[in-house]
Image (cartoon, rainbow over all chains, first blue to last red; front, side):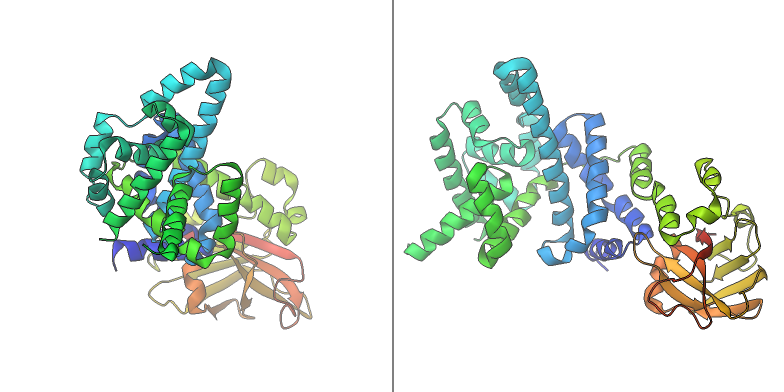
Length: 184
Length: 230
């Protein structure tokens, strides 16, 4: 049985309330999902809280896994990524309220993927990694910024110093080029 | 490119923006609605979810500290036993004090710590608080079709039957059948229930002769205990 099939089976059992399967699923996937929470939140305590929430969601929503047509790892990664992004956005919002816009923008720029993240991305085996390298570096960076840092169009526009509409036009165009590469 | 193709591209770009979390306000609300009702859009959204999740492939795994898992277990399962007992009507039989003290008086796990000559497997002791009813259950994976059931003390009231229930997680109790009349006996475990055993709670209820006329227990739960791995 392949690892993905095993994980799929575990999710199926978790949907039936099987706690042993839930434990096995945690053993098999928590390191990957914790890595994602850490990468997005860049704060250990917050990443630990996030991981806790992620597995609580997995326990409660395992029954919905079968109907969404995603591969098991994608399903788990998406839950972790979306939850971490939600927390990050809430943190930014409260920081903006507390510290004013300039602080928030500076903080955001800090948390945006830098050269190190690009190096990590360069090692991606997946087609998406290869296809992102076909885009202008700035635009690939914007896609990653949205996926891994939850940056909005407004935030991306600020970061890249372009008007919001321009940002949206060129990101959409980049996404279409990405798709063209992915389906090639 | 045809108009239809443009439309498809627009939808595909929209789905990608949706997955990335770039949509806001009305646009987001409309996209969410389409996810519910529009199969083609749902497929585009799933494709992008799949493709973009590969961005996370480059992220190094990191083992979380053990406290995270403990916190998850506490949140999901810690409070459940009490909720479960309350739901089963066992709460009054136990007494609030025993539960508050965390002693969970009906469960005796001490003898589970001793090596079992029967070999590795699962065991549970299901006992009433005053031990007027004690049922011991053993499950041997090598003989997976049967639970060995022994009942050192207690019996059904005249004209009544004792019924054994398996409770897995939040699910409704599933009947495992009537306790054998003899002190020692066996109960067959349907194959689909076997994977549920290791994490289950077993309970005994007092039922009309022949067992509960309904899907779940109708009489009071007289004893309960968790299944323990040896």
